[in-house]
Length: 426
Image (cartoon, rainbow, N blue to C red):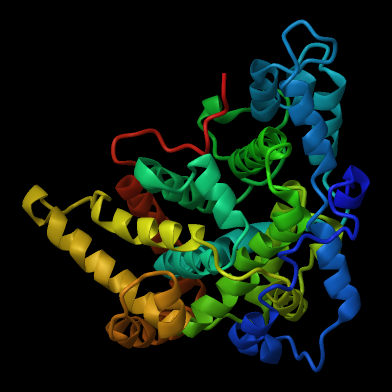
């Protein structure tokens, strides 16, 4: 790992954001402290998180450096070569440059601890969560994370979730998440395979590795002009660990809070799914766990390490709320699109008020609403999942329903556009 101390930009190795908002984090993290059965702060873990702000995905960094080389330079990786490797595996690239070969040798070498049956079961559990998963991913995994400076500032700097791009970027996140639910979608591609074959096999693997490459390119593009003393590296291991925790442990907590019973076995499958996704994304193994309670413990300490809210947070949160009026709602006639958009906006604000609390809503510049959405969602989930979830046929029905809901959601975000995840530059 390359550290800030090695770069000579931060003698201590820790950016100034580290533990800046610890008191606030303790207040916000009370539920995590209980769930993680935490008696006192683990200072060794805090120090590990602090160092991680100055660490990056090294294989990705070498790939990005090779991509950014001038044409004709020895070792140059072209976008065409990267696309071929993503679609068909690096073996399909004639004489692959060293950085490309190294990167794909790593992501194609599936760890021995991966249990494919458990990964596929995690995808089925994820699908059964349906609209609840979509709600939690938007409200707790994304908007909730905007309450802390660092990653939101990078998103604003890249233009990734502001202005007219918000709808598409949120759709891309949901598209990637939906791909994880399909059996076999996370397996590495075999020679001769690819998305052009029409099969979903390997699709989630390709999208996840694609995102990792995009992150590496963002890091390479911003590292020299980013305020590393303040924030650490643009995309660093601490923030990646935080993001992973928002997508696995927080997903489980959030869905349970919406009345969805998630058994220990189902939680284990979900955690294993996301552990492998985290590994594919280049998250350091120190932060990869498939035990739910250990994730809550790590998440609590990551929360204590965060900065206070920055100006970027409210910008992103308000853009995410506004986009609900811009989405298309399949099946609703044109004159009623605005009505549905208004309803979805009010529903989102109602649920956010419960999840985040009035104080955080005020920090993000969002209006509060009565908890009417939770008042109908929770009882509905309690009935639906405790009745249908009791039998194999019922679980299959929930799974199919969840997939249909995901397709409808994507159609709303993308409209007539092709669903994809972050176009690679030419």
